[in-house]
Image 1: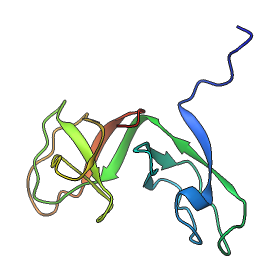
Image 2 (image 1 turned 180 degrees about the vertical axis):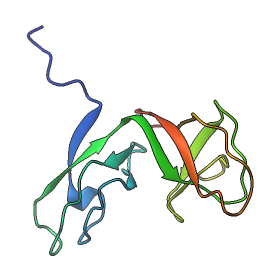
Image 3 (image 1 turned 60 degrees about the vertical axis):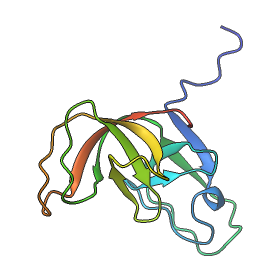
Length: 123
């Protein structure tokens, strides 16, 4: 195909779009202003705003993400990103849909990781 550019499961974005003036942490989730969510593939040190550095975000795949404690998940449950507390949750109010749960979790306060298959689309 002459018009094929890339698979699109990993994209490159300027660090200023993710965290102006702050370092990007590999493995951490980031929500772009258009509602697209991805996981930083590497840590990018940013020494100040406007450094012009780029960061790769994985938009698809299965990741273990910080989740809302005391919240049980079932396999296939819709998972949202709470950008205020930077955690995955099943609560949809004011949060962005990022994918589905791939592993059931209990609802104890100590269960703070959840396995999520990212949907790779902006909502």
